[in-house]
Amino acid sequence: MDTKERKYATIGNPTINAVIKQLYRFDSPEQAEARLVILKQNFVTSKVNKDNDFIVWLRGYEVSDEEVEKGFLGHFAQFICIKTEDNKYTIGAKKLDVPLDRHPQKKRPTRRHPDWGHQVLRDIKKRKIYFTLEDALEELQKLQIEYPEVSIPTDNGLLIMIYEKPQTEGDRPIHKYKFMIKPTQEGAFYITYKSNEKVKVAIPKREEEQVEGEEASAKPKAPAGYFTAMVSLKKKKRPSATSNAGNK
Picture 1 (spheres, rainbow, N blue to C red):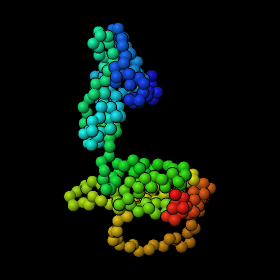
Picture 2 (picture 1 turned 90 degrees about the vertical axis):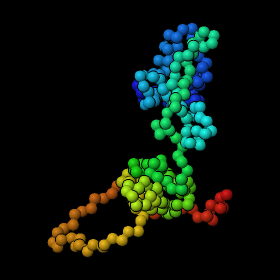
Picture 3 (picture 1 turned 120 degrees about the horizontal axis):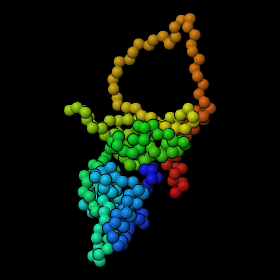
């Protein structure tokens, strides 16, 4: 079976639940091993696999209160053949202790400022496309709600302070950024950003925009969708506190 057709293992899946609770029963170890091969063909295995072991990561599996505080959301489990007390055989799960930094999912520590590892910021850096203006605004709103002390919403944008690991001694870890929603040529939207730090720079002398006697090249026309998106940006205004209050 192709890897793309395999399912991700979850504790809510009946088959995975049967393994965790050791509900399977077989008369011989060969039958149990054969079933184990079939399961491996149907579920995505973990990258921490060694020696062709059947290892999966399970969200919510065997997580203690202490581990939750540390940021654990689940654990790796190795599926193995086990002999039961009644001389039968079953398939069970063996919890593996793997460092948290190797887990595919983990709880983000609570911080006053976001960093570039935040999912919304990662999407923005990848220039994720939003099909409606509302979808793009919703992404920025997530940041504003999660980090209210260091962000300011604007019309079709957001001002926010982001944590960045200092590269050299003396570098400041907190930097100001301005995020803005822009239309694509096709009429969709994306979010761009730039530094919002106050930096003194020398103003260069203005150069002549056109050489005398030289004809200016014709500027290509943007598709109709682009202009439609631009109109949406200009018309879109954030709802006032008064209008919101009336809807409650």
